[in-house]
Image (tube, rainbow, N blue to C red; front, side, top):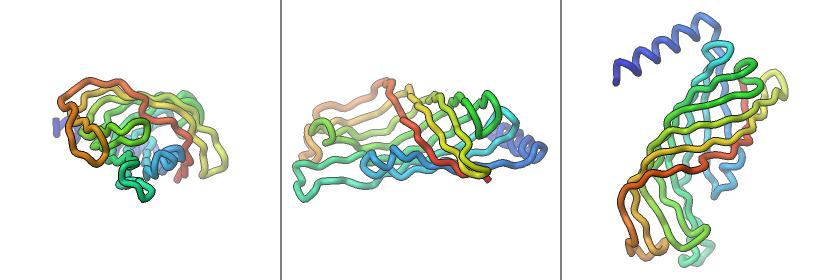
Length: 185
């Protein structure tokens, strides 16, 4: 597996050197509204129609507004790697994205008092459109979902520590509603 990753990375690096380097850095604005999730994505074009990227989301906060019984949280560390196919040209127009994602999470108290924490890994797929705003700035719109497996523990409430369920399960979930601001180097 390490050899395959090294070979793919070498091919991407050599293709980038031959076609000129173009990088992009972006952030997804709706993630900040989900209890303050910080996020960043770095992307590299290696041909006219293809780019690869890595992304991270981080949320260390627990919100309780002074009342510990009304605790809300969407704590997470999410790491993903993906490839995008651009229909027209990299960083402009329609795109289709596929990749892998890992997430360590603890969420609960938003819809019900139940709190779930665990580790999830899976494949993600997304579709979107990128509009050119200026020479360096783009606006990205899209949606993504992911399918995978999680090892989880479910608690009755955010603070009590009483376990109501635990185990492993398959899931299919929406992953991201994308309204991103992109800076292209």
